[in-house]
Amino acid sequence: MNLVIEKQKLGTSVGDHVYEIIKKNIINLNMPPGSRVSEKEVSDLLNVSRTPVREAFIKLSKEQLIYAVPQKGTYISHIDLEAVEDARFIRECLEKTVISMATESFPEDLIYVLEDNFKRQKQAIKQKKFYDFLMLDEDFHRTIFVGVNKGSVWSYIEQINTHYKRVRMLTLIADVNWLGLVDQHMHILKSIKNQDHELGQEVISTHIKKLITEQEELKTRYPQYFKID
Amino acid sequence: MNLVIEKQKLGTSVGDHVYEIIKKNIINLNMPPGSRVSEKEVSDLLNVSRTPVREAFIKLSKEQLIYAVPQKGTYISHIDLEAVEDARFIRECLEKTVISMATESFPEDLIYVLEDNFKRQKQAIKQKKFYDFLMLDEDFHRTIFVGVNKGSVWSYIEQINTHYKRVRMLTLIADVNWLGLVDQHMHILKSIKNQDHELGQEVISTHIKKLITEQEELKTRYPQYFKID
DNA sequence: ACATATTAACTGGTATGGTAGTATGGTATT
DNA sequence: AATACCATACTACCATACCAGTTAATATGT
Image (cartoon, each protein chain N blue to C red):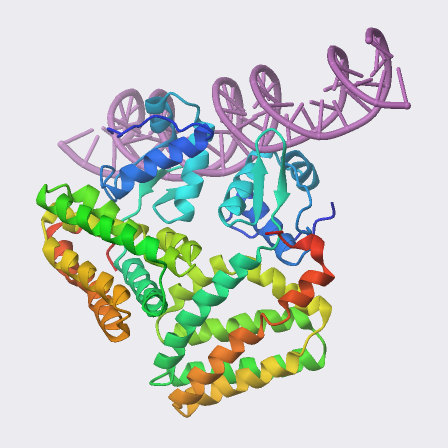
């Protein structure tokens, strides 16, 4: 086990800190799906007691990122393609509506934020900073939700999105058509600016669908990461 | 504090059991919003140690049903009308799509389940068993999701729905036009049976909106239960 | 009588020890 | 050689003890 650790943020409990660390290490696949992780192991690594680790485990298991078998062990959940499909379904439903609202009216200052974000997306791709790109991508979509006053809805999506995020991390590793994504973001941005309702609806569907096309390929390439059904 | 307690289900941990008990007592407003609840108090009441109680509290706070202030106390969250609106928004988005799918094709055996459920709804109303009605109502909607293979999506909704559920419990207490709800369920059922896409879309919007019309009235009637914004 | 200091009784957060169930590897038995 | 058995070393789960803040009632000084 080799955790990526960062400093504890002020005003947070040890339990919160452990939670953040583990979650990050799961999503970036540093803790691979199916692998084992024990309270004691983590508590030794982070030099804390087992209690806050347990607290973190409880939260993570509620997000289905890990699962515990009593008196046996705790394991990183395999990527569940059904959960990914659910996340996609939910996102498409919600984001279609949100884009529809955004193409009707959208605060000007946030358009600037989107444009700035978009520029940095292109930079990130050019410099092959893929993790940064993923973060920018998330910000991009969140900003759209915020613009139509549905920021909290996005935070719900993020909770459901965890399995999906790991798939995206895999596509990152496996190298994918990033420019296509940037191109679609450009169209989304354009549809909001020009209040082009049609374009918005069209692009958002293909956008979200695109992100899951490579799933089957990934499953054959990294079978050990995926849940068997 | 006066908890409604039920027997522990087999195969569950003490922590799970405590979680279920508290959650139920919050949703049925037996533990009123804003009131205080301490780990020690609950652990004494249920004759368990603080650890499983703490486990339950962690889960509940992740669902925003309670919040803890370190070294001060833990409190039942006030009903957050913003969260309710979010839940409504999400439900309307998702359920519209799901009904749309259901009006295209729906397994016959589940139609029978819906019809049976519908009959029992009418009975429940007649006998004024409102809590039973709420449960039947949930089953009704869940069955529709299951019918189009989106059962797991419904379970996500349930997680978001918690604040909303308390509002519904309030409307139950405050006595409301239940027959209207039954009537709408009848229309939903009909739209699925007759594959009437138009009717389905129309009724689901009004159905979900209806459930929140009384909110403002409730807020003036039970101001202490609601979050001030 | 009033303002201020003190303390005692709480709280949630953390550490640790004990318990029961599970996997494993070695040993004795067949 | 194969199998049954048992010791051991894990695990998550639960109980308990301690810690560090918060609060409110009490004591104290003016």
